[in-house]
Image (cartoon, rainbow, N blue to C red; front, side):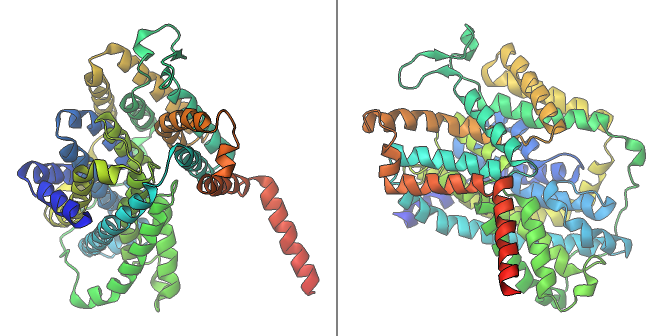
Length: 504
């Protein structure tokens, strides 16, 4: 059955429409990633309305390809102007820019491309093999287990958010409240609509996503001082690495890819976390530790393979459990839901054709990224020259067009701007927006499964404790919250100090 679905996905992915979508998505990702300050998440949010008129498999494949392409694209600005094009390229700066200063920018791009290819291919293979196994396991889940999965997803991504755990959980809670707007799925009663007919069907995911991720980005570009922008360099040396260089980086690249896949599977982490994990491990295993930070191709390849490997890893919990592995996969998940496809335990069986097409598209986008990178990297460096004064208005115009096109409603445009202002001030107080997005997406599943579970348990909340799977998942959720609190840190330090005293 799985083999049959894999072949169906392959057949869909090699169709002309899908291949064109993959190439377009990868190209857009490459150029967006090269623009300092922009992100794959923002680009996916803007592109999402365009996919509504497409076949679901083709549209989602384009979004996933953009995600993959942007991961490599972020290295362009990192190598040339010491400014990561995306957060996932932060560790790339450490050795990519020193190589550029040594007149080896082409070599740096070549190593980055090769490492990105390996990371992307291995993560696609992991997605193709691990996801069906998790999907089959998750098919055993009923409403009680699904409620626990939703709670776990929100608490994990909230507690793993950078900065304050409390702010991360608060962001997730706000997302849950926003998910309750509209008609109750069980009783049909309007909730939090304030008498507005526009809110009876709830808050459109895409409108909220565009506002939260794109408008704050445009405002930050307007605020940024362009006078401190560094001069753009060019390069003339060859990009393809030599055989000796490949022998040196391949073991490191494979190890870093595995780190990226595992990191991606953990909800709330992303390419920015994975690249530093892999970079540190590469330095620890290297025989040339002194070269790190001075132009080490081992350090560069570790960072780039890890952040591309995150893409496939982050899609594993997204597709099988309905828990977004990152903010970018949260938008891809929202795109699936707009097409009437609910990510989760039944996705791998009920929508196997679309799921496996997406997986194959991810693999092909890695190959397309390598080919396009070799051809267009020299051209892509020019996008770093685009003025913020031009870029910011273009982003806002695209936001308006995209949000209006969803339902042909001016109300959605106002709603998009409201979420944009909310996202901007959330960034100002360092409150992460990713947990809010996850809360909005998982809120519907949590709401429905809670109603159904209480009906099964005849109104008793003990139904969640009596079920062994939900009890374990809820316990993990509780632990993930508690271990991030100041009290847990205090107890941990106290235990360590007591052990030291006992030894002495």
